Length: 301
Image (cartoon, rainbow, N blue to C red; front, side, top):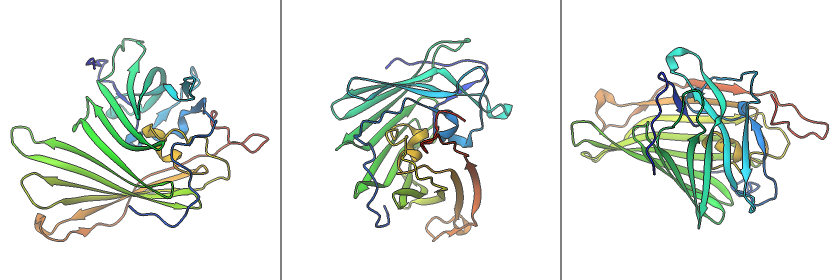
């Protein structure tokens, strides 16, 4: 893979972000129906870092897709250009940013790219490899040049045709030492009437020189305000910013994220930790518009 660099006045590119109840209405995560979404307005995606998006008048602010003759996505056009967080500018969708998807056997290879514009000519080296089994995503390995750690692996578990849990792991090493840490994000998913109700994630790490695992944080994502319209994002699980929307039968209009932190007495990690009060991290809501047939107009805002 060619190593690319991005230099543009400090601007970086951000391309993003087991339990279940007894519900059995959930469809397969990657569906095999004939519907192919052509585009959607960027406001309905969920990007990392609680990103505040700006939608300029000079563009349509749409994320667009191209398909091959087997109805597989081969290109996603549009992503977010983000200034330094200290600038307060937030992010802007730009159609010069895109992702290519290549299919080989049971794998999908995704690379984020750029069509040069305004002095920008490259993006950080990156790559995602997704492994499928029975038309479902079972593993994702992601490399991002600008992240530390740079490589993470996510494994997915299903039951009754529903995604019920996934775990993301990665390693990082302390500079100037032999200290290595294995990081874990273990997520359990809960459904009600075929719709994602919540995702509860436990963040932890294990140093290579100890026998204990340190609990850090419990993060809860809550999805609500569902409509009764079939989900047009149901085939977009492979993209991080539409992953949450892809999992449900219908479409959520409210999202909330909370956190609790684990505290160890006297920083003694052999002890049982206590957990903090709940902190409200983020809340989003959307006012959907519908056409005369009651279908969600997801390519307008």
